[in-house]
Length: 157
Image (cartoon, rainbow, N blue to C red; front, side, top):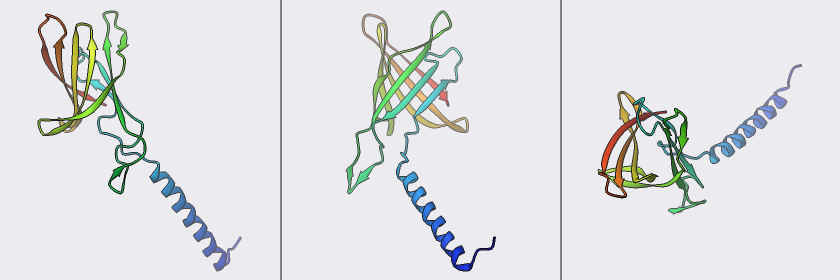
């Protein structure tokens, strides 16, 4: 079947219009996620926690209209997974997290309660060993008379 020049031009216009509509609706529905978002695995096989899940919910952190934050507010959560003595993984309840500035960088920060400690978790994605990794600094704050301590881990997706 041979298309006339007029029909071919009309077909091109309809195709172009479809691409523009699809692309604009697809692009407007995309959210710029945070680099910390996702499931991360501890590089130390016996590290605690073994996995960390970071989630962003409630909206896009990059939606600004006329200088004002638009849409719903953005919320972050952290959930840690530890290995029990039986070898099974246990997911501690997810906790709220927020960005805080420390050492001139923006870190995702949340408090995870682990028995007699409050683990103050600081998460930041940075280049390490040639790729992006999640640096996790944990300040183990004792809630009773035990000594407090600090650990530093690297995680990969």
